[in-house]
Image (tube, rainbow, N blue to C red; front, side):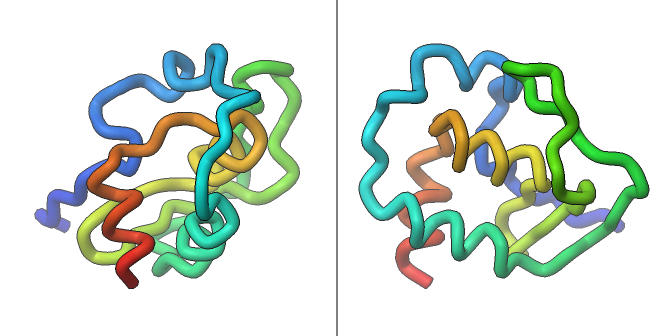
Length: 98
C-alpha cells in the first residue's frame, strides 16, 4: 500500500459533519456525486454502512474509492447526498476541475 490519500472530509469525524446541514444548498452537488461514484474502487466489503442519523443500513454495498489523490467510501457519498455533509474545499475544487 504505502500511498497516503487525503480524505474528502478532512480530519473531521463523519458524524460531526451531519448536524444542521440538511437545508444547506450545495452548488454543483450532482456533479460532485457523479464524480464520487466514478472513482476507482480500491476495496469492497460484504457488509453495509449505517446511516448515522437513522441507524438503518445504507442500501449500497460498502466500497472504498480513490482518484489517486483523495479517498472516500460509500458512506461518504450517501451522507453527502442525503445530509449535505461538508466536504473539504480542496476536494470540491479538485472534483469540479476534472
